Each structure stands twice: as C-alpha cells, then as structure tokens.
Length: 385
Image (cartoon, rainbow, N blue to C red; front, side, top):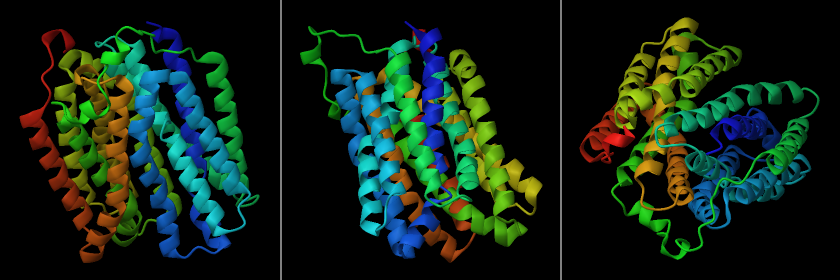
C-alpha cells in the first residue's frame, strides 16, 4: 500500500480538477447567452453534460479495471482541458454543445477512477478516510473554483475557460509525473473478474439507490435555493455565494477530517444512516430560513450530513461489491449523475407549485432512502467494521 504518498497527491489532483470545473460555473450561463442561447437551450447545455456522465462513467470505471487507473484518469483530465478550450474559442452555440458533450464523455472517467484508486491503495479499515479525502478535495474545489471564475470573468467571459484549460493541463502533468499506477496486474485472475454489470445485479444495489436519492434531493435544493432565500430572507447573489462557501467548507472539513475516524469506530453503515438523519433535519430547517445567519447555519447542517454520505457509500461499496473497484464506483457515479439530471427539473417543478415543496420532498426522499438502507444495507463482516 502506498497510501501515505499517494493520497496527498490525489487530493491535489482532484482539488485542481474541481477548481477547473468550478471556474466556469458562474460564467457559462452568461457566456452561452452572449453566443445566442435561450433559457431552454441553456438548460439542455447543462443537462447534456450530466447525461454523458451518466452513460459513460460505468464504462470508464470498467476500462480502468482493465488497463489501470492512471491512463484513464489522464484521459479524463485531458478531456476536460479540451472541452474548456473549445468552449473558450466558441463562436456558435453548436460549438458549446460539442464541447459539453465531449467534456461529459471524457471527464466521466475522473471521479470513478479516483475512488477506485483510493480503494486500491487503502486497507478496508482506512477506506472511509481515503474516500473522505477525495470528497474534501472535490468540495474545496467547488468552493474556490466559482470565486476564481467570477474574478477572471471581469477581464472577459472567455477568460475563465482559458484559465480552466490551463489548470487542467497543469493537473494532467502532475498526474503524469507524480501519480503512480495503483492497479496491480494479475493476469491469471483477470478472465474471471466479473463484468461491471455484476455490480448492479449484486446485493449492494441499495447503495446505488441511496446515492441516486441523495443526489436527486441535493440538486433540487441547489436549483431552487437562490429563489427561496431571496423570497424568504431577501438574500442576494453575493450573500448566497458566501452561504454556499460556508456550507462547502463545513462539508469538506467533515469529509477530510472526521469520516475516516467515524467509519473506523462505528462502521460505514452507521455513518451513512447518521448522515441521512442530519440531512433530513437540515432540509426541514431550511423551511425556517429568515435571514443570512439562519440560511448559513441550516444549509451547513444539511451539508454536514450530506457530506459524510458519499465517501461512506463509496467505501462500503468497494468493500462489498463483487465486481472490480472501477466498475462499481463507475456505476455509483452514474447514479449520482442521474440524480443531477432529474433533480433540477423536479425541484423547479415542485418550487413552481409551492416554494417549500423541494425541501419537504427532500425530507421525504431522505427518509425513504434511510428506510431502504436500513432494510437492505449490505452485510459487512466484523473485521471490516
């Protein structure tokens, strides 16, 4: 195991990947509008990326089981760089669509391969800690990325895309030079390795359903909270930016510092259940938001609960799935993307009926996920808990 040397490198790599991704988030709507996109086309532009990730994440995970983690991760990061560059030079809407589709297909390799890499280099006892570190890196990337994008957008709307491209290229070279391959070659057992479809058909299917429900409710919140907070508490974009930054920091700190300790002490099953309880409470509290302080506190409570679920689910999946690490984490990423495809539309529709409905439904969905997990959770041997 090369945990001590590899995990800090992987943290830096995933942080830079997500910084690059986050840089374009506040800019893309205005950039697309400048090129001529209407609101419907903008929605399609956002959705097509998640759709490609939904389709291709399991395939990339399976490929990484076959040829190794490092080359697949490099393909994913190079795909991001290419996508950002095409977006930077786009002069027509079709070019943006090509870039988003291409970026979705190739960058779908990043998250499942990173999680599989962690599973390769950690013991089962330390798996939760490793997954938490990857989660913390991605969370912090989303905190800093949009802020950087907003700053450079003052130069020009295309500048953040060039910055994101440059960040991705730097990350690519870091992976090439510093990150060692984690997948051990075992040619004798390779033909007997189950296909990635076996992960879906196994007894761990409930973990994919839990991830879908968590992603669905989270993305519904992200799509509607700005409108909700503006109406309920009169909060503007700058205040909302600070609120999401506070939530992101809180979630990242818990993932990076506490998930590992909790999973070692209590086991992933207990931590996942605790995370869902806290998330449901956070969803309910959001209905009581009436100023900046309550919005920051309640959203952070939700973020703390939500933040421990994904790394714990990932750790438990790699311990209990019958398929390769890449195949199982690829399917998990696919279900996460499916939630992000459905969630914003569902959340927006519920908000149009009543502005509190996305959060009431978030409580219901989380409780439903909790019940399903309680009944069908994977059995882990005593040595793994």
